Image 1 (cartoon, rainbow, N blue to C red):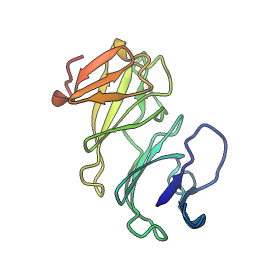
Image 2: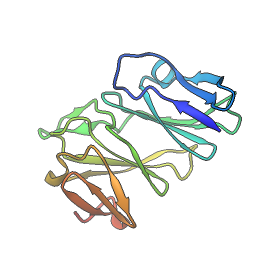
Image 3: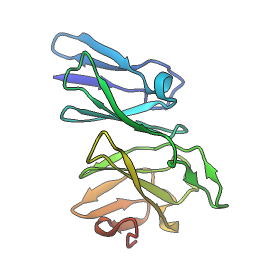
Image 4: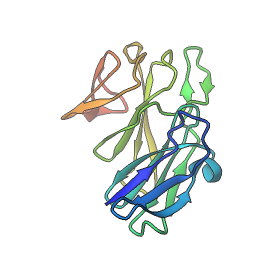
Length: 171
């Protein structure tokens, strides 16, 4: 069993993301360092042999790593452009995720800034080719910091979003 400790973005720590064997308390790797290598602190999400590092707080970015050999993580893809948030004055600002969530093969996250009524959806079905597939904007998303899912519905802020039709989702 492995433990993945990330950077999360809630502090000024510059500690790399670490992968540990929790049975032996052995450090296997600290080579995954999105902040130093990619320009954003990485909130880790692990699905099987795939590590997804999602930029948190004020650092937009998403990277995927193959961790099938946890002592030698391999960067598969990274995107940092196009993830900026559109504020109420139609200005793009540097804004990372608050708490990213997974729905199927998508990373879904709201903005750190509660005044920006928007969530983003990134497709990681091919982890070597990440794609921003939707910016969903609606006034009911002002507090869209946490996402929960039931079947095809996303619940966030004051919104219930039918995810079957994004990027033009019904809110």
